[in-house]
Amino acid sequence: MEMMNMYDVIITGGGPIGMACAIAAQQKGLNYLVLEKGALVNSLYNYPLYMTFFSTADRLEIGNVPFSCIAPKPGRQEALEYYRNIHSHFKLNIHLY
Ligand SMILES: Cc1cc2nc3c(=O)[nH]c(=O)nc-3n(C[C@H](O)[C@H](O)[C@H](O)COP(=O)(O)OP(=O)(O)OC[C@H]3O[C@@H](n4cnc5c(N)ncnc54)[C@H](O)[C@@H]3O)c2cc1C
Image 1 (spheres, rainbow, N blue to C red):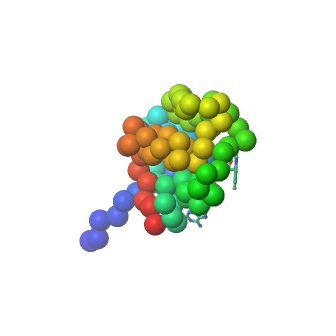
Image 2 (spheres, rainbow, N blue to C red):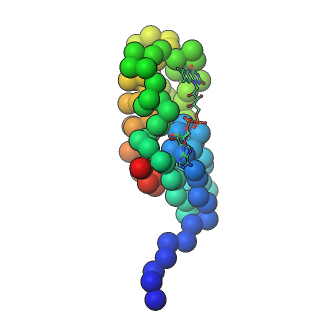
Image 3 (spheres, protein in one colour):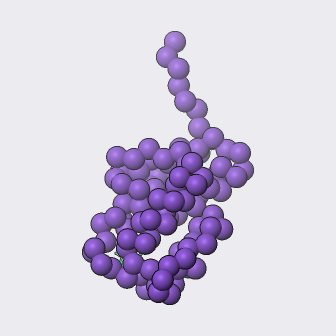
């Protein structure tokens, strides 16, 4: 018989909210999977190259991990780096593309 992975939770979208849900599921000991149709934080990835957020960095934090950047409001590149670090720090189970 073919082996199947069984999950407690399927999360659609690997944006900041999907990643925050994944961290919460992981911390509760749930077997979860994030399905992302594009790149990690795909919306941010597709922002204009030199876009600056309206929000300050502290308002974009997830998983209680500080988001430090030079200016109070981060740019696209800093945000991509932050969420990529979150992905590897928590070893999140995200299937991209
Ligand atoms: C130019 C610009 C500036 C912004 N500035 C700010 C700001 O300063 N502060 C702020 O709070 N917000 C800002 N936003 C909004 C910001 O994009 C959202 O707050 C944030 O991305 C929301 O996160 P999310 O995870 O809910 O959604 P998204 O980041 O949109 O994540 C959804 C994910 O789901 C994936 N997806 C969608 N459908 C499917 C599917 N069927 N199957 C699999 N995957 C799927 C997408 O590829 C995407 O990665 C800005 C948006 C833009 C465009």
